[in-house]
View 1: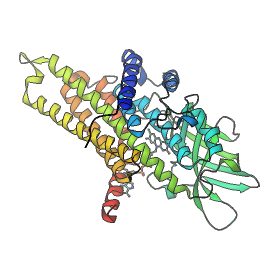
View 2: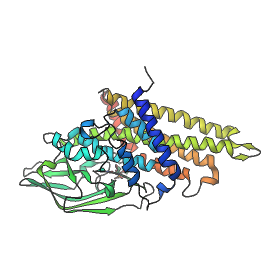
View 3: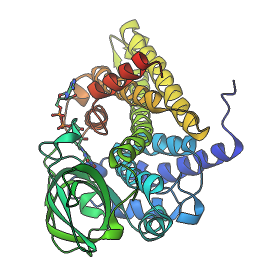
View 4: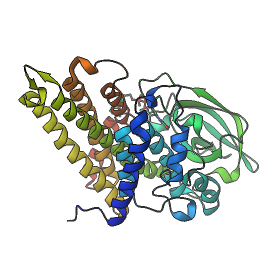
Length: 381
Ligand SMILES: Cc1cc2nc3c(=O)[nH]c(=O)nc-3n(C[C@H](O)[C@H](O)[C@H](O)COP(=O)(O)OP(=O)(O)OC[C@H]3O[C@@H](n4cnc5c(N)ncnc54)[C@H](O)[C@@H]3O)c2cc1C
């Protein structure tokens, strides 16, 4: 068993590390304010091919592997979980195109996003469809050579900054059958699409989450993804991949919590000693470090399985749920290490806690991850 990264993975990790230290360190807290623009940073990440890490070069990406994708999200999220979320949601769009798009669709819709010129988003959730996507009410009705889409999507990460979107809708193609299918479309060039801001959430200020309203939005028949296959298969395989991204985001957030907690434990003195000399604080740091190492190994293993064309559905769900639970536990203990100093808004640790919380919810809640894991265990897969 080889735990060493390849030379290419090491070199990419160090490029991302230098970038994030230069870009994020001076602006760390600014990225939390709702009015702030994260677009410029995203543009610079794009110039480094970091918005298309695991996308083949021919479609505008960096042509690297899933392990490199995970390493990049860990490094970015160490500084800023919000930008980590932008990258993860954008990668979900890209993975869907990679898995289900035709060559022409990839050239038209994947290339501009993977090359960093544009941002993509993924609109699956609705008021009636969260964990259970059979509740999707958005419809796509075929009219001649077009599909007419009607409905309302919620919680679309990157909605406000995206040019392109993958949207899930129930198709009615004239027969009795109803089926959930995915469409890809140009948000700005398609009439009948309205954006609704949802920026009233606990977290995710820097990227914004939107509602997308489709009112007789007409797209060409070429917008349908996976022409001859079923949509829910593609939804599942792209979500597997992005769960590796969310696990990585969680590891990065947890690493930041640990680093800041160690620094504080060494410098804050009570009873004439640094608080890090008290066993109660030492155990918190030891538990955080142990769990984070386990979470990182699980995350990189899931990515390695994917890179080696082995099944990784269960492992991605395990990594996502475990790593986000670890990040959440670490951030709560981190606040305890900081005491009253950090029990204030806009301090690093409370921001990390908000960053960690969303990782337990999106891309499938951790309860749903446990259902998937158990289902695979029972099936013996
Ligand atoms: C900040 C943010 C960004 C998001 N970004 C996107 C995005 O870009 N695109 C997108 O399509 N969606 C996005 N989402 C939506 C997200 O994926 C959903 O919130 C998530 O899937 C859960 O759905 P829900 O919120 O409707 O919760 P529900 O499905 O209503 O679940 C509520 C609770 O019940 C539990 N539960 C539900 N069913 C079961 C069950 N069978 N067994 C056990 N427990 C169960 C859940 O785990 C949860 O704890 C985002 C959400 C947020 C908050």
